[in-house]
Length: 114
Image 1 (tube, helix red, strand yellow):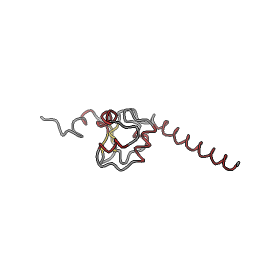
Image 2 (cartoon, rainbow, N blue to C red):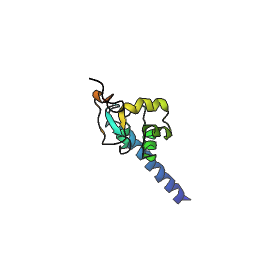
Image 3 (tube, rainbow, N blue to C red):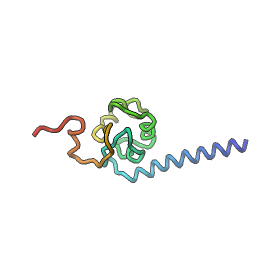
Image 4 (tube, one colour):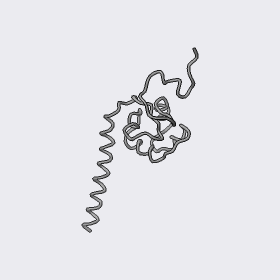
């Protein structure tokens, strides 16, 4: 029985370490500072998205790959309002990159008229 208790303790400690690591990584990127590829992003990159915390970031990773932005609605914790908040900051192809205000309108709606 001591062996089971020890194993459970190790698993609990490792789980907390992973959660703490994800929370600590949140400091690396400010909210809304990146355009994130949800198919390749790290937990810390996903944490830069508005309304996304460690639990939802982990769920995003678990449910990969995504072929359409609407596919994120199958992630536990993401409803239509959350998806609406993160759409300007996510993409499905290419690499994660710094967010620039001129990205809005070009990513999903096409280039603005001249």
